[in-house]
Each structure stands twice: as structure tokens, then as C-alpha cells.
Image 1 (cartoon, chains in turn orange, cyan):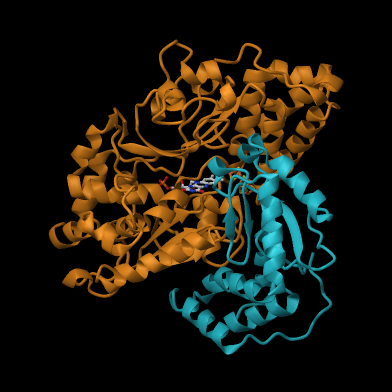
Image 2 (image 1 turned 45 degrees about the horizontal axis):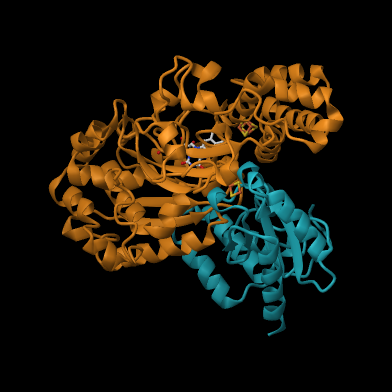
Length: 444
Length: 173
Ligand SMILES: Cc1cc2nc3c(=O)[nH]c(=O)nc-3n(C[C@H](O)[C@H](O)[C@H](O)COP(=O)(O)O)c2cc1C
Ligand code: SF4
Ligand code: FES
């Protein structure tokens, strides 16, 4: 059986209630941290654990916490990123729905470590049911003395609130999220200054993903060194993977980092193979923003070693032959899936979600959507394919926030690895309206 | 698009205002604008959409300029600037859901309701639209219905039939 940390008690009935969560050892991390540790000691344990941000970028959490500015007389904030809008990602919803107290407990531990007296959990507005669940959990924790004034008699005060978004992918980007939390449009800010210096209301702020924060309780209970023993090398601990697409058992799985990709896709403990007895054609391994890989490159690296679920192994080979772990949104495409259509769909998504501040992103995503639509519907030319590549280069690295890159990478990688399928759409406009290109030499 | 007619002033009832005040209390002194999104959600749940008059009343309540409300309401996709059907069926149309049949579901819904995306059925009961990834890709196709954002997973054509019958029956009570 695989190692479980976040989902250890997921099967326990009523684990969503305070009593049951508490009876399984819940809130012990709050007691330990607040009663026996200094805030600095908590940060130190998280540093030792090697925990990396689970929102997508994989930045070391302990280091992020230690960058937080601490000017006298100015409040500091912890803001949890529960925007979860990256296509393919649905792990935070799962966590908030089924074990809300894991997030609340982590929020208290992390707020204490950072010296925050008011913290917010920003949840995308569509997750209204989850917002209610969290609000109920907060009341339960408060009634038990784990929130509010003078927590456990320590003199430490913390208020925790849930803030709804309004339906905008860009508000997952941390500075757009802070703008949104201030009641504004979700336009990302120019960095620097980084949130650690000037974040919410201009005050020092840490933004962390739901899963990152939930992982900190275990680290405090068991020690950072113990956590660092789990996983593989610099990819420590466990990770929630949301698996979707053409799989026998899509869903949310907690894996120990280091698991071979092949085992994740085909073993019965995880996804149970490709649905309807089909063969695997391609995988988008870390949410829609990361490069798509053909089956043979997701199972094995270009150097012919087994590809593992770690930050390092998935990015082995750079963008030429690798991809990224990202948010852990694992999307599997079978032999019937059309790469052009899937790429067009993603481009439409990014165009729709661009906040419109920078021209390369605002215009470029629109052009890509239009050109891909043209190719998909049999009106494309070979020049259109090179035009897409050119637009990609002009977006990448030339925008205020990484959404521009996130829009460019799926298109660039699809053309890189599946160029003949794009050309087939151009050369066989009639045929491509009726048939699939199929597996060609991509599959496994 | 903003509709500039319909200028009847809106007055929120006392229980709603009570809730608004509670929300404002979550933020530091002078940062009451942070309450804008939560308040717009409550106002939309109350009236079904955000009319200019509703937005103006929110601006007055928060002591901010009306434009500050409009620019936010037009940015976020969850806010309706036009009247909708009583039930707005929002189907996820993003990649992973399309791999498991979301496009067919949207076609079926269009045919079943007899209205195009964004239009309202003649009885005023339904409208539908495609929305982006709802963070439920492993359970696709999915749809949600506000204002409580009730969720329906693993949709089939049969499931849509049942759902619409249920909503029709509910609306007659
Ligand atoms: C366009 C865009 C969307 C993002 N969406 C999310 C999201 O939905 N959830 C999330 O946790 N991080 C998201 N991020 C990453 C955040 O900016 C930020 O890095 C993260 O919340 C930090 O938390 P972590 O260090 O715990 O991962 C997004 C980034 C970009 C550029
Ligand atoms: S890259 Fe796109 S989403 Fe990001 S700030 Fe620029 S326009 Fe907005
Ligand atoms: S793609 Fe439909 S919920 Fe994510």
C-alpha cells in the first residue's frame, strides 16, 4: 500500500466533522506548534521537510516563508490559494470537500509560523458548496478554541475567513488573486515587489496552495526530517494527482513522489489503464499549461529511463522531450483523441481567460485560437502551422504574468511532437473532418 | 453588455444588509471594498442577475464609485449582466471534459431546451451556457446550477432528461 499523508483518514466516516477529525489526531499540530514551538522553529521544520509548493510552480515552501518581511507595526497575511482553475486539476476541491479540517488545521499552523492574525482562504466562486463546508469547519474549530482570541491560552489570536472568487482562471495567479481579494478586477501585478514584501493591502503576504498548507500539519507532527525521507531526492513527500481523460479510473490519488508514470497509469491501485481497452496516445501531466507529451515520452525519457512522478524526472529533457509536474493535473488522451482539437480547445480557454493587460497575451491567444480553429475545421495551411510557432515565440517571456507562457507551451509542444497530425489536417481537410488521425507512432 | 434602462432604485432588505455588514467586518478598517465580490454574489442570488440599479446600490453601501462595481462585475464570468432563466445550466466545455463527451452533452442540451447558448426558454425557466474547467475533470462531463452551485457529474443524455424534468416539477411547487 502506498504511503498516505493527506488522505490517510479519507475512508473514515464523517471525517469532515470536527469531532471525528479530532479523534483521529487532528489539530495535534496546532497544539504542538503553539504550545511548544516558536514561529521560527515551525518555519525551520517546513524548510527541513523540503516541501515544495503544490500550486504549480514547486517553489520550496519553507524558503518562501522565510522571505516574508516583518516590519514593526504592520500586519502580515497568509492567503490560501483555493482558486483551482487549471484545466485537469481537481485535487483541492476534493480535499476541501472531504477533509476541510486538514486545510483549517494547516492554516492555523502556517499563520502562527508567519505571525499572521488574519488569514483568508480564497476559493473560486463556483465552489459555493465547498465555501459553506469550510465556513462550517471554521466555526467548529473556533468553538473548540483553535481559532479566535488567545488560542489554547497562548495569547496568539487568529481570525480565518473564506473569500469567494467570481469565475476567472487568472485569479489563481497570486497577485491577481490579491487584487481580487481587494475587490478589484483580477489583473496580475508587475513584480517586484513580490507579495512577501507588499502583498494584500500592501502588507507582507504569503500565498500558498491548499494542498501545500494541508501538508504542513504532518510535518509539524512528525518533523521535517521524517517528511524529507518520503518521496525521491528533491521531490519530497506525497502529492495529490488529479487524473482525468480517457482512463478506467479517473480521480484524485495521493502518490508518493517517485512513483513510475507507467505504474500510475496502468496499475489497478491507480488509474487502471486506458478506458475501453484503447491505447494511450498522449499525456498532459501537470495541468493544461504544461507541454503535452506523446505516450512513449511520458513513459520513458529520451534517455530511455523510466519516467517517474517527480519534479525532476518529468522535466528531464527540458521542453524538447520533457514536461512538468505542475499542479498534478494528469490528463490522458487515448488513440481516438484529436490533438488539434484538444490544442484548439486549450487555446480558446487561454484566450477567454487572458486578463487583457499585455498585448502579446491578449492578441496572441486570440490569434492562436482562430488559427487552430481554422486548421481543425479543414481550412488551414502549412504556413498557419509556422505562424503558430512564431506567435508562440512572441508571447513566451514577454508578458506580465506566466499565463502568456501557459498559453504558448501547449501549442508549441503539440506542434513539436505531433506536427504530422497538424499537417494531415491541412493536407486532408475532408478526411480529417470525419476520421481520427489515430496513433501513428506516438502510442504505447 | 450593460443595460442602461431599468433604473428603478434597488433597496436591499434588512436581512441582506445584515449579511453585507457581517462580510465587511472580515476586513481591516477602510478595506470594505474587499467585500465587493461576496456581496455581488449575494445580490445576484437575490435578484437572479445584476442590474445597473443593483450595482449602484452596492456602490452606495460600500461607499465606492459605481464604476468600481461595474468594472468588477464585467470582469468575472459568474456575474450576469442580463436577466437569465430561473435555472442557468452551466456545462464545462474545457479539454478534459471534452475528452469524455462534453461537446455532445452541450449539443443535446441545446436541442432539448430549444434555445441557443445564452438564450432563455419561452417559459423563462432555463438558460444554458458553456463555462471553463470547473475543477471536476475526473467526473466529466459536469454541469452546475446557481445560485447554490449544485453540481451534476458524469452527465449522460438520460441524466439531462431527468434533471430537466425535476427542475420543471420543482418550479411548479
Ligand atoms: C495563470 C495562473 C494560474 C494559477 N492558478 C493557480 C491555482 O488555481 N491554484 C494555485 O494554488 N496556484 C495557482 N497558480 C500559482 C500561484 O501563482 C502561486 O504560485 C501559488 O498559489 C503559490 O502556492 P504554492 O507555493 O503553495 O504552490 C497559478 C499561476 C498562474 C500563472
Ligand atoms: S500575461 Fe495575459 S493574463 Fe497575464 S497579465 Fe498579461 S494579459 Fe493578463
Ligand atoms: S475540464 Fe471540465 S471540469 Fe475540468
